[in-house]
Length: 400
View: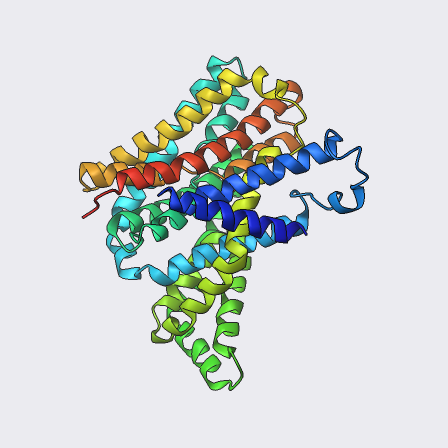
């Protein structure tokens, strides 16, 4: 029932937003917000309590590990598909500007987050955590929107994806210091693991991936080539996660490598069918349902931190547009392209939530401040995932 409701709401609202000439992904996230709110009210006992519908509605819980797992598989599919469609030569061409963008997208939001923490009487350490929460980009929403607009294979899109990979790595390294266990040796070890991942799975992968895929062609079973490709996707995601970087980076790298082969066109539609038909919409429903993480039963918690939350959301948007946009301009892009890059780097998700929860679980933030930062982080991720598609569509309008 849980999955069925999620798919139905995602498709219906996605279609409605598409008819309104807005990215369908906004409808899918909105579906999650609605369903998560309904589940929240059910669990709080404020609705359905007089109807004895407990057996049916007790299963409506969008924070379960099973639902989250399906959603996480969805984002792996999305980044893998984007890797299949992105030419590696374009990524290499934009390597320099992507590095500039990543640095700008870390430094400016970090400073703005730190200043906002000091302004609202958080400690220096808590303010550093707030700054780090604003640094890392989550490109799932951006990639989906760029695909819907048919502009994924552009210099700007390559810059966004390359910059997001680099700033994710920078965010992980900075996190080792922020959560209190960091030292030079910790950062060095993480750097070695990341370097090994890219050496083994990218550099060596380029040399052997074609041979591995040809095995799938020799296995005369239905969709054997698809099965081999799925295995590579999951293995790359697993080892990327073990290396200390996001699994979605591994999925993106796997997509790039397989996309370089001639045979990749034989599986692209299969992956889109599986991904867009099931896993990817579930991911965006899960993103929307995150708003209700912890089952907020009243708006009192939100109103108590209203001004702080508004400032953080504004800084999260301004920080990426300014930091990444200026860096893109310095890297050689024109004004319009630089703005597009800044807007594309706005969304936050996985690493922001990881930093916030890690800081709280390790006791670096406690009491009321812990509650404020966690709730604000969730609200920021929802706000940025809703704002970004709208701004991306506006900035890419009449794109040459």
